[in-house]
Length: 246
Image (tube, rainbow, N blue to C red; front, top):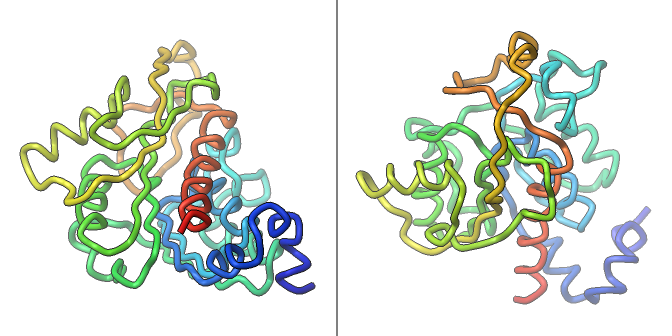
């Protein structure tokens, strides 16, 4: 099957010139969990041909309720490798690069961010996220970021705003406080967020909620797929809309 056959329904909507631009862009996505995994799938299904996915974690049982690579058969496997297999089943010609690494201030140079047209942030660690946003803002790439998707249940409350205008999100607030004390992003960027904030009420589930991830979370919060997936789809939509407009 050719590229034109795979994406004929998309081309009907946006035209062949836009499809050619989509196919030419290089995208790097940090995090393929509850948000990032759905973003990756939507990008490939939209015609992106050059995608790098970054995540050091392996699939855990607690991921199954919301993460695309997580099934009872993939527990223990590297998320990026599960995702690559799936994405290449969608489009075998897509160039999927997997980096099972942790982004941090110490490893940032190894990602060569300047070679990408789009940088997408879907990671959880506050310190790593802050450094990525600042570092990515210094490149020529267009940057999009996911704010906190946990403790939410209503996808109709999901919004998009420039980072400094995001309201009602504890993660965004913590990032801004950190950046005011350290380095700030050097250009504006859009974020996906929701002002909804629900409490954790099923404390008896805590022992089974551990994901054994690459960093220790200050608190384990409840999450649901109808929110995390819409965050991811919205991120992918921002990328594709930006390409089509330009």
